[in-house]
Image (cartoon, rainbow over all chains, first blue to last red; front, top):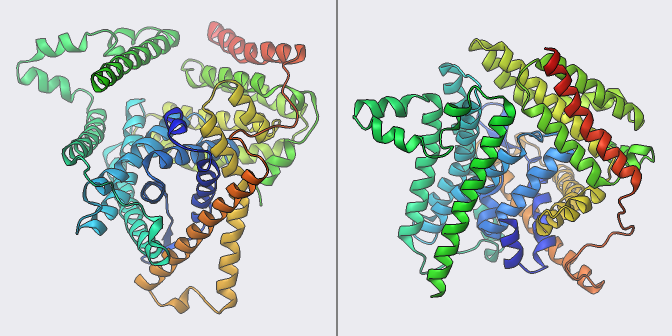
Length: 276
Length: 243
């Protein structure tokens, strides 16, 4: 992702993205009043996506997370990988899609609000799901409370993003990017739907890991499902649950390699078709 | 500002400070891998790895108590989930979560407190991490303090004009005032970034950041790499054999 961004940018972007990353850090010191005595602050993914563009925002957010983990011990180094995926990549993507779809229409404000809200909501839901998948058991009341808290902070992020974007446009309209004309509506909508579905699905699947199996048995597609699950390493837990950690780690790495290989092949195929 | 402490520690000149950042990065990765994947005999392993880190901190003459306190910054977030685990009747997993996150933070401190950040990023660059991301991170770190001070100045300026939290009224107006302040900070940061880039171009920037002293991987670095990456792995194997 960063390499692709590197190819697409000129050198002028390096100081710009760095300083804007520093801005997001500093922005977290400005408190927004929320209700009675409590305050919140900006997370920044959505704001960066609307001003610098989505790929630049992904790089900047990744750099922010890396500096946070390395220098400030905030977020932790072990969680850096998942955090980058949750917040920098998928969070920014979730923020940009509504803007991409409705950013130039009449419901522009709503799109910005939805983007800010989604960026935090998607990140938080994915983080929760990853914790659940890794075996941390969270009782339903605790889960409910944390989801409610995340939803509240997500709405706050949406509101802050709208307020800041509107203030920015008063200062200088050129700061905020207009979504490109002639954009493919269907692709964006499909992307947004897929992202939401995946997030909700992952969260749901991790809270009730046997739900899919039960569904399979009820609808009588158990045999099909099992065949699907038995594809190499797809359900590594099943085969490797009794193996030691090297086995599990190996399975994980092998799975990643397979996914990487598949992505590479698909990418090549698409590129060839485009150039042909 | 409190983060400057880490910067000051990293300017030391002990054996650990002088090692090549690449060796330290690999050693840290091995340490993290042997910690993160551990499941059996976790309390013994954690104690042994803790002693290992303590030894490294003492060797590098880093104030141990201050380092231990810094590593505790990760705890509030993990403790929430650890307590959640505890309540849900799985105290062992909750404890493992807290211990692992604390030890990994301490390991990162041990590395960051013996390596200045520019050297660390240069090491990552030589290890083929994406250059663009590293350069952005470098600028981010460089201007972090500048922009933070800008924000503080803005706060002071507002206060000296008689602005107070209560004086702005309630609810929506205060919210909009904060948003306006953020927008101004955004515009100033953006303008500053453009000035910085022009100044860099004027000084012959070619898209690569130069370091004054080239890194060289010496025999001592190889010895350190071997010892520092074998230690956590061997400790873990030994403890899992005994347990």
